[in-house]
Image 1 (cartoon, rainbow, N blue to C red):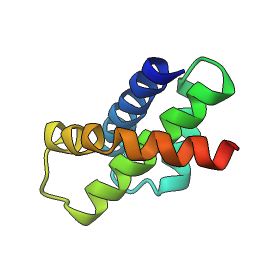
Image 2 (image 1 turned 180 degrees about the vertical axis):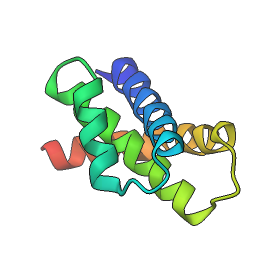
Image 3 (image 1 turned 120 degrees about the vertical axis):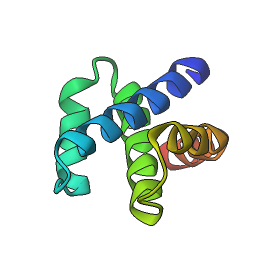
Length: 91
């Protein structure tokens, strides 16, 4: 699942940032619901996308002045941690 999960994490983060930009008052629950509707794939892919969306949302909330590119870069740096947490929770 490795590379597919990595792509899903980045896709989820990207979709979350776009949705938040279009809906600035959206809370995390609404963003995640949007991600679940938008991402097509198996349960593992959807979960990976939600993990990426959640991380991007968290970074954006802590650093509102960061641009999308910088947020995606931060998410990319944390992909291994996100995947390890996913594998641990899945076991």
